[in-house]
Image (tube, rainbow, N blue to C red; front, side, top):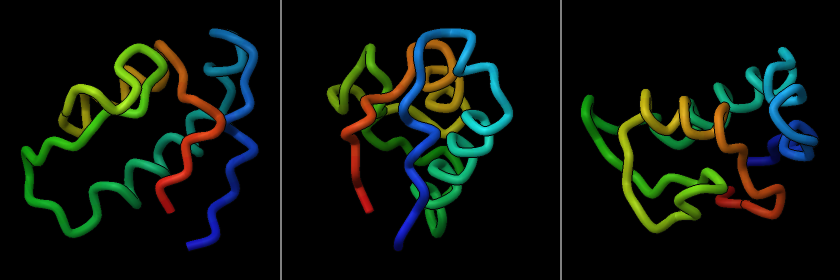
Length: 76
């Protein structure tokens, strides 16, 4: 999959509130959780957990919005 990753280059909380960033997070999570059963947990790519702890989709969405995501993260 060739996903636009430009949204990942953010400068703090104000950039993470922009529609482009939120849309990118939603697209990433849709890709990551497609064909997963409800309640599935996967490694969270937020800057706080950096793929160490697993989270469900809802928590991961909050973490990426609050903490941000490493712009070099490239699972696809």
